[in-house]
Length: 126
Image (cartoon, rainbow, N blue to C red):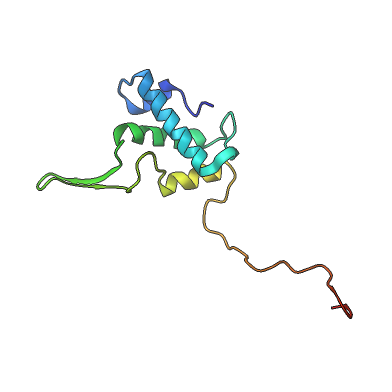
């Protein structure tokens, strides 16, 4: 499945990228998308998926370590997460889930037992 092509990524990044860099960014993005929405991602991808995919791929190439902030004096570096690999931002997650038809935000969850249609006890209908 192609989320985007190398030319689109190179145009967005405005720098020369090797085919291997484009392929790695694509594969990591696709893997993150499958991790988030699974088989709801279709081939070809739904409308709205490409813009999220290109944003994620560009970030993979410009900030592969997930650095959140740096400080020169004292050499302090903080990272977005303790995890390695590609992690979707909340906005990217919301946009991707909306594109594939999933609920993007919080929803209410009913944890009660369903009401039985008709209960018959020992002495008849209840």
